[in-house]
Image 1: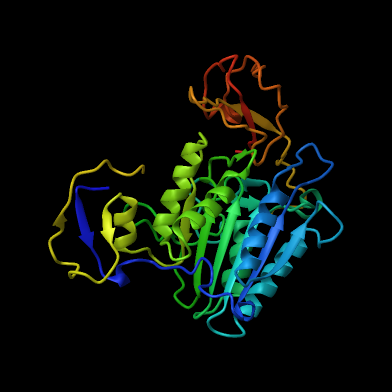
Image 2: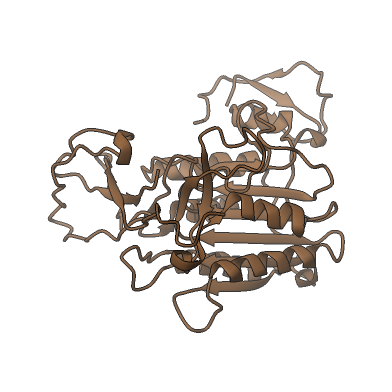
Length: 383
């Protein structure tokens, strides 16, 4: 925290109803869609996505949400094909628009990737790439790109003013997968995309930057587990900036090099930016915003549509990253979201990493020789 305490009016913060304050009758106001892509029987199968979405489903249902669950890991649920995902997203948006005050939730766990951009607005993808979900039938149906998600939720089935949606993407390359204008950082960022004030409140949580991957530990996806732990620790009334800092700290504590991000179609506030900077903020209507800050003991700062099949995309392609465990703690890495499951050696026999440069495809990424005694992780890289 900073050396001073700043008092801000309640309206100085973005507030978001992560979960309803009361579970009484809330299923008429709250609906969710949980999507788990495990790709069973393939060389790019994922083993933790269903567990992650089941954990979120339970938390949502315990708090009054009616949940639709898509999974390709059993025959009890509808399969998360591209058509089914788009259909259920459209259904949720249409339901939201039937009555003001309704709240929606969409969460996805599976592969994420980037593909050659087909930008609908000139200059909206400076890196020349669209971000995309990988439906279970992507070899025939194609990827589900950010343009298609944006078209469904913000245009053809546009979420209307007076309604709200949280979209939670635990996958690689997902920061701008919704193509919404504003990012939550220490200073105002955006609008990166065109702002439409007629749209309801959209709030996105993403597991990784557009050019980065998302990881898992034995507990599950780092982003999913970070969110669950943050809400448990901070409570339902926690502000987005507080949740984001807590999630990033969780990832750091797990020794995972991924940047969890938050985006919205509404600009974040001065109060949010102060929290992100580590300022100790009083959130009640104490002195006016213009009042001088009260002195306080100094403390340390807080840590801060392509053709079907997408021929250029191969989820089984991997590259290695150096993972350096602290001297006193070695988390049990089982796999990386977007990658293959690691072989678990006996506790007394650490894995021996192959000799490799550790570079990403195309010559980019982390380089260096892997220590023979350090565990390593793998990830899906399509950059």
